[in-house]
Image 1 (cartoon, rainbow, N blue to C red):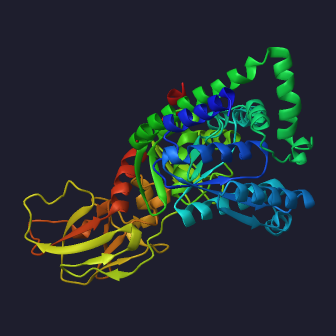
Image 2 (image 1 turned 120 degrees about the vertical axis):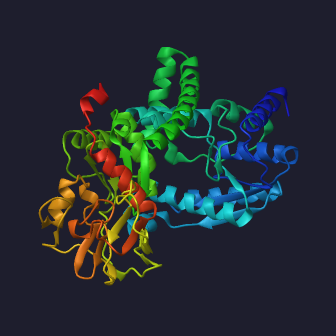
Length: 480
């Protein structure tokens, strides 16, 4: 091994140490296609295994896309691993057939297959899976994402580690790797589909990047690579900052609904995008449909309207006052349940309603809207869902429909059918979290008192959302 190859190996070692890439794992599985980059990575990891204290394995996937060429790649990798005494797992997957079954493009189906196999290997061996992406791949990814209109995450390129996947040679350039393989007399296979100009990435690799080098100098691509590193630092700093910012904006989460202070969550399109990016996975919605254009479209609709507006994947957003809701469903209280004295009725994610008899308090009204002290005549207490036309007699007011009452009290639309309705006998005594009925208020003539409480994450969220929904929100002042 000459000084040049040793220099490359030292670069990989330093890179892996600085990034703590192997993270104490005892097994590393190298994904080997047979191409030059993956063969060099296998050679380098074989050399570094003892230093870092891991056992090296390999995995090869025959996608059955390139006919006999793919079979020859497999034979080559088998022979190489046998020569170097590296344990190898080979998977043969009919990707074209899988793509047809799943109605996906060939490339997308191949990525899905690889991801599944890598995760399976990581689980099976308690390992990390090493991919042979280089500095050239990072530059190509940057240009590709730039042309697609990607945001800062896309422009930051591939991460050195993503889940169980690591990229230990991303610090090296393809030209240096090929030169090293020739000097080391290590063969590799060429994938001629990498020259198919129907693929955007190949046009970037073989036409656009050479044009940049020819017209702006060889260092230009190194400057692009350095820019991706700086963008990655920026991305991570922003994510840390936004994690704190979004925690400040988040009012709470319950029953598949997340509520935020609109003044913070809707301060600009970028911030709203970050709120969505962190909220949607928590609601069970993936980020496949996520785009800058979609974020902007939803943002301006929510700014200008108080109505529900779809995001994608069944999720929607809506705003009332200074409260922004992101959810997959409206919340409904659908149970009818008795509330025993000294016990509670369980309403699932909506919480619990409990009842306790107490002496007549000195102060008839509780400061906590989730607690009501009411006159009690000994009739059964129960919770029931909202029904059309149901009437309620608010304190000091006239009887009105419950639907009109909760609207008049500023209850957000998304929660209006979720509020537990507490009956004493046949009469509605308390719209939980909002107000007790006039006939049940405490007076000097009251003999028996029951304390009703609504507990749980949802009622806590309800109160915070109710408070913010009543506040004014000037979106244009916030944006400005």
